[in-house]
Structures are given as C-alpha cells and as structure tokens.
Length: 524
Image (spheres, rainbow, N blue to C red):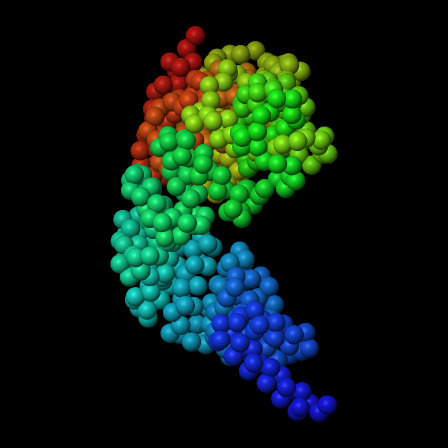
C-alpha cells in the first residue's frame, strides 16, 4: 500500500474517532486512537487526540506519554502543553506542570487555563506569592471563572490571608452555587479562623451537592474530632482510605475488616499500625479492650516500635511490619478501633500502658550518671517531611532562651537540623543524645528518666504520655484534631499540660508561660 493511501486511511480514522467523541461515545473514540497509536507513534493528531481523551477521563499518568510525543513532533500547540501541565500536576510532578504551563503561555499569552495551571503548580512548589500573580492573570482574562476564584482562595490562605480567601470563595459560590469544591474549601478556611460550626455547615452543603466528595467527608470528620464530637468524627475518619495518599493506604488484607459487628470471642484478629509512629503509640491502648472481648490479638507495628510494644496488655503476639503474619480471621487498623469498640470519647486506659525495657533503662541510668538537678527532656522539632512541620516545630534557638537555669536538660531528638546543632553548641548545659539513640526503646528509656518532657507535637510527645511521664506539649494555633481546642489538658494522657500559641507562628507566649511554670513543676 502506498504511503499516501496509509496516510489517507489514518486521516479517515482520526475523523471517525473525533466524530465518535463528539457523538458521546468516548470509549469508541479511545479504541480508535489506541489502535492508531499502536500502528504509528509519529502522527501528531493521533497522539494529541489520545492524550486528550485519556486526560478527560482522568487517566493522567497514561495521558502524558502520547501528549509528550505530540509535543516533540510539533511544539506549536498551546493546548497540548496546557493539558500536559494539568496531567503532570495531577500525578504530583509539579516542576513539569510549571514547565508545561510556561510553554503554553509562551505560545498563547492570553491562555487563562495555563495561567491557572501555572498558579496551581507554583502553590504546590511552595511559591505562593508567584502563584497569586498567576491566578490574578487568569482572572483578568476570565473574571467569571469560579474554579480560578477557588484556586485564588487556596493561595491566599497559604499566604496567611484567610479573610481574603473567604471573600474569593464567596465570589466563586456567587458564580457557581453548586460548586462542591468551593464549599469544601470554604469549610477549610472557616476552620482555620475558628468558625467550626460554620465549617461543618459548609461541608454538609458540599456533601448535599456531591455525596461522594472524599474531601468533604474527610474534613468534616476531622472537624468533628477537633471540637470533641467523637461519635461523628470516627465515622468521618473512615474516609481516610479513599484519599489515595501515601500515609493512608489500606493494609490489603483479604480477611474481613472488623468494625464492631462480629463477635470476637475465640477469634484471632490482626490489629495493624498505620500512619505515623505517634498514631501507633496513641491507639495501641485499645488492644486490651479487644482482648477483653475474647479475641486472640496479633499486633503488627513498624519495626522501630516493636521493642517498645513488647508486653503491651492484651497482645498475644507481636509482629514487625514486613515479617510474615500468622493466620488470622479478622483485621482492624489501630485508628479504627474507637469506632469498632463504640468508644466515642478517648478510652480511659490505666497509664502508663507502655513501659521502657528494663535493660535499656539500666544502660541509660548508667550513661546519664548521678542526677544534679531535675531532669527535663526536650523535643523542639519532628520530621521535616511532616505536612504541618512548619507550624508544629520550632528551632532550638527559639526554645533556648526560655529554659530556666537550675535544671538538667537532655535533648531527646534523634534527628538534628543543622541550625539546631549550631544553637546547641552555645548551650553546653543541654546534653545531646542523638548518636546514642538507636530506636524508640532507647527514647523510651531516656524519657523514663526525665522528671518532665517538653515537646512539640511529635511521636515523642505520645511516647512520653504513654509511659506516664509528666509532659508539657507545645502546640501551634491550628493543632492536630487529637488535641482539641483551647483546653490546657487532654483526656488522652494523664499529666500532660498543653501550651498553645495565641498568635499564628508566634511561640513567645506559650514559651514564656512554660518558663514560668517549669521550676514549680519540677520542684521536689
């Protein structure tokens, strides 16, 4: 067959594919374009149309290859680069999203969608000020685009301008009252400014418009938990499995999930840790209640926690994540246990429910030597990869001036940031144990020997509470749901005193109060 005939047939099939899509038969259109791409990857139109079809149905990763091929063959189509930007964004490749949005704008400066995609990418790359300008440019071209107003609100919120963010969301809803995303985001901003009842109403409105909105159900659940409505909160918390984020991936068990319906007497159940180390420590308390229902309890935890969980009440067998598990009949994630057990409020649990290993305790007692003054364990920062680390952690340089003299200080952190190392060098009265801490069993033993632990919201704060050490917890203005609002104590851990920021990002007030309280708290 002549080349001209082949090209003519391809052109005819391309037309058929477009007509199928226009006629509301996207599946037929996709089949045609897949077949064509199997024959030739050098046809711009075939690559473009297949990429657009795949992107339209949400197959963003798969769409990238044909679109990238189309762009290599012909770099003059701004639509191809714009859709590539959207696909890259949806697959978490924010640098590529920005590069492709910029290329689309070089080809068409008045491309509102490309400005919008550029703003979204810049926000995710931590460049909100530039993102703001991108969204403004988009709105200059399409001032009645409700989606752009929603995105503008996101960047305003990131820039600490929640009042303006609310106005932008109100504008979006005036243009598109049934836009569920706008209601969800409005709820998020309302939570930030402590208008939680209104936030719940916004989430309810979003769910009325889109009953399957994962973000609406999830954020409503978190809001319920934050204000202490645990019964509703635990129900909403189950939506975490649908979020598609790394920290809430299902365990993948073929055995049935237990959420309280089945009788546990004589049955073997696997309880498995999830999310962060602190989450596992906090919710391991419920293992005893599961055993009290007659179950044989296997507990699976991260390897670094396993030595700490030896001897936990109610656990028949402890398994490290990644090792083979013995046979079991049912399973339940640790953070689903309050719902499964019908425990709306934090379960009362004799504390301490975790204990430091006797051998480690003896080794650390010898390492520390004689006690010259009351001992204070310090944790100024957690993992820098935590989503809210910028708000929850503080530098040692900020903490140091608020450590009263006359006390013996020990840093309980295993990870030290470079700036903290420099600040610690100027405080020889603070002993640093990062090199000697090998796992959480070491941390537990060291914390056990403290008269009080002072910590930001990290796993060590949970550890200190679980082993029964008096703890001073430093919290930002937007705390994690488990710490509630305003209270100076928590039902999760006896002996934990909470010091809260009164102004976002400003640690002076809670640290001054802590400094005033510490001497009396540690007095004999």
